[in-house]
Image: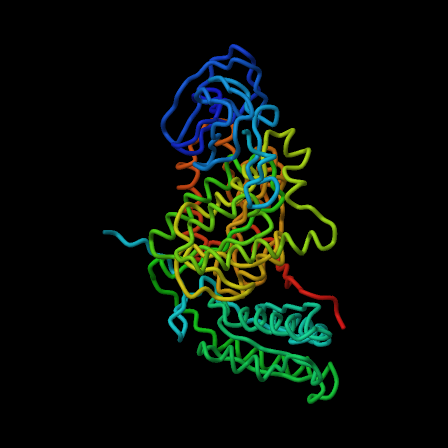
Length: 110
Length: 387
């Protein structure tokens, strides 16, 4: 326990260099300056909304309809503009695969 | 360039075993008590009773036979004693012939020929004891490219897609780059990633084969009114932060790493290529892992969030968790704790490096928790009800 406290802890993890979201390892409050780690590299950003543990925050501004990438792949599309540092989840992210592997216009933003 | 080595048993057919088991295997469940009776008196043997071998429709009978044969052929098995009843769908002699092509010693025993089960046990104890003396204990240093690692995730939780699976993905890439083989299955959990997996297939034919596997799982579910895709992620997943089915499935397949998919094989079928290969199979942990043994996997790396204890009869299972509570609570069942990744203290590369070292150690003889605690679970994925 003591050893853990002495070491530098990061607040979130980025899984791939092409990702534009990071995942929080602790509960984040609006205004928190957090550090995210991708392998040995860290970057900092300011949360503009609350982001719970296990949830995603945007690493860049994503336009409406823009790709959201995690694990180096597209995990869905923004259903509205997402600001840098904003919570990314089912309220602003839609799946591209929710109804079969055929692109379904209902799940894509026009 | 330095070649990474493990210490294994070199079989007559050139395959490498990381264990040296004597397997006592029934070809039908009627022989179970005899098999167990043999195991009682030959404690070094792996007695493996199971509920298969009769009442199977033909395509399923072929699958059961393929899996039992694959199990006997697995290079972790140094010798085999097959026990049949006398009337059964899969004859011990036919299986023995196939298994013997590997060059390992194989004996057969048929209960109805011996007389009764007690006579069969007595005969079996004699045969098993002889087979034990035929096991060659010599281990040699061999390159790690002879390793086939089977992957499984079970009892997944938030830590699986964030820590355990991506960390194992580092190990998959490392093994593939060293010339080894990685088996990825649990096809139902590919939904949402079928296009990107298809793009990663070495040939269009493999991509087509993969699409067929994925669609047939989805069709099967739909035929009984189940919408797998529509139900993922589930409410618990979403509360935990997973937003889309792609995200959830990517978290699962990340354990397979990033390399080209070299082959797509049937359940329990040995791949024709090295590298990352996909095996048809369910997400159900036990059936999946058992199929991988039949395909030739010598080691299983198994990520678990909530803590799943199962092992296999003939291969070490390395249990990896990224959940700090599970790592503490179930430390007797867990081999590697990668929860420092989710507590922000370790990078995925560092966690992957630790898993790699444990893989090499297990492959060279270090017992995993499943082996120490005597876990020998086994199940074959069936296709139809019994007839």
